[in-house]
Image (cartoon, rainbow over all chains, first blue to last red; front, side, top):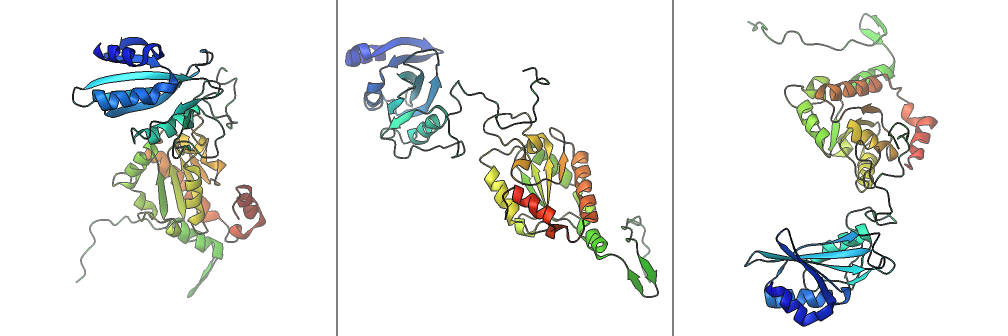
Length: 160
Length: 187
């Protein structure tokens, strides 16, 4: 891929794991350079549209538990590109992309709401989907899916 | 010459309550008269959030015809309504809204919980869904089903009518009722 050479030339060892997955070019990057990559892709390679921004929790990857996934699209060529940056769960700080893409505002709030990623510099990092009183980030793997306040479900009857 | 009535001559009329009747007078209990009037003119407030709401639309429409029970007039302002029909999944974020709507209704007010989700959270045993609306407001009648058929909703509605008909006129002033409300943090 042409873009792989550009990225390697620009960022060297900070970008890795280049791969084609389901016809989408993907790679991983250091979390400190996420904005530089986004700027490069947006300004010089036409990836002007942020399809999606979300997070994934990998509880087994020590020190890289939280992944933030960016997916960009080049409207002219319909090419898409996706990359992940990783942050430790103890200090999940990632720089915000709101200055580059306005759509990142709500998407980052969602990632914060469900995974607790702390987007540094975000103008309004508060919960977007869940109730404000919620005191945890529900899509982290250590929390059960079931509602813990429910008392009418007998474990024996449900085979648990 | 009057036109002879050839159709719709089987109009059902509610039976009058028990009492003493004589020439030009009729005595009975006020509770029963008020109950009779209320139960046959309930104004429902549909609080429909998902598929049970679709079943309710069928219940309202010509085939099942909720209007037969004196409820053709749906109110979309809680202040005008007697019965809130909660139909569908109530997310935890929706719970304060539901409670607010309930608080805006004037006494006497009744609550009908339609379907598994409104009654117990249903299949949505998850962190974001309220596990039954009786966690935030007192419920009078539960209708099971996922979703319930219109017949079931009508049956639930008729159970509400029974409650309305037999409710004592001073029930809403009783200490038991106040205690029930205060257990939900109302007043």
